Length: 335
Image (cartoon, rainbow, N blue to C red; front, side, top):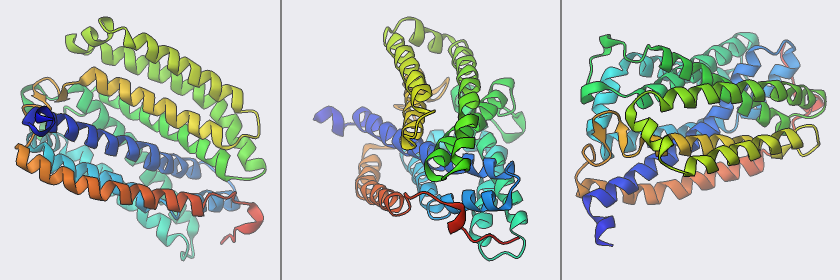
């Protein structure tokens, strides 16, 4: 008990809390962004309208997790927050503006006389946000030497971070396809089953390349994978989830493909987190030397204990209310 209330114990709890917020954001808003990207390559106005309706009630609640993540990072790990956003100012601003564009377009689409313009904005905002989130995620894994770097160093623009951006776009597209398999009715659901089938194989290949690249980025990552037998379990679990996904995909179990995808993303996220531990921003900032004082961590974590259950309840409530299939006949389309 004394360890949990000390600096190191609170730092671990703070890290787990922020990791949970990040993972929840990726699973929820990542799916929305994937739908937004699919919307841009859907030719029929009626189908685009159905896609937009599927994310209209939930997109803003899903972004709450990003707010919790950023606010918590500032309060709990101020040194890492400062170092990261100093070096990542440009991609962070681009991502934020893309999210604003996506959100405004989703809301104004219902009253716009030219919904196709909003559709284009949703597509552009979703694609740019997804790509730059991948760049930021890759930058965390790649690290910031010395714990600080000015924005003009372009540490975010490397082959690894750009590949990370492309990978996250593919992951979001796949989760978006899983969402649309569940929410759409009729022919549109069947189309996304077909798209998920080939996209799943491509994403798995990209993920394998990414993990291999990540392992060989530095000696710490390589040692974590080569010396720990838990990674054999990770590979086996990922193979099992892949098999389940392709087993249930052709059938009428519309929710299972999405749930399998979310579990697979969670598994990969945990593997990356365990690879980085104890670093929050390699190669210098760990969760122990960048954490706020224990009094600050305790105060902020009490707030998280109060806020997270309400946020989860609201997300669950919205999903339960709007869980039905969206039929073409039930959607009013503006041309």
